[in-house]
Length: 205
Ligand code: TYD
Picture 1: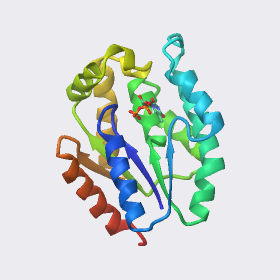
Picture 2: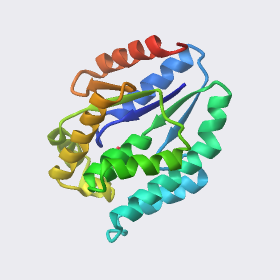
Picture 3: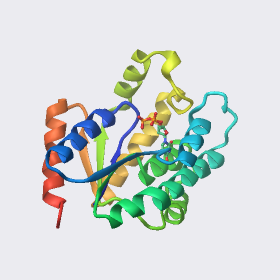
């Protein structure tokens, strides 16, 4: 089973992924955890290019293609193999991040990104997408509190950008049955319980 975690920056994804993978371990469910961009040697190098502040000149199409290159490599070298071994793949972001960030945030259009995602993923897509939803104001507040030095190139964006990205996630949550929208303003434990409940309902079906 393939599961991804999505949401705007600072939504609490990492905390929930830690709790979820701990649950898998406690239940002796084998899993592979990956992150995007990254997750392979090539992908980690692409990640450095994408997030480094020195690349301010990067245009939206280059940005998208770099994310897609990292994704294609991850699918080919890690995800397909793990799925063929019946492992649960737990991905920190996947194709839907590109639809939200590049398709809507950068304005390249959802349709274009969907077509390119189909190519990059070789049609390998998650069966569950946990979308942890927080308002952009909260994301910005959390980004401010983490200090200017800690911000990467994408995190320096303004509120309108985060509103577009979030709006896109909400639209996908309405459109795709794989999406599970979870209110990210709930307590950590409540969010975790909701994730486990959904997983149990869908696992092994
Ligand atoms: P990261 O530090 O991993 O952030 P987070 O913990 O929020 O996932 O950086 C990933 C950044 O890249 C994040 O700002 C989202 C962005 N991103 C895209 O814009 N498009 C994509 O396709 C992916 C996978 C990530």
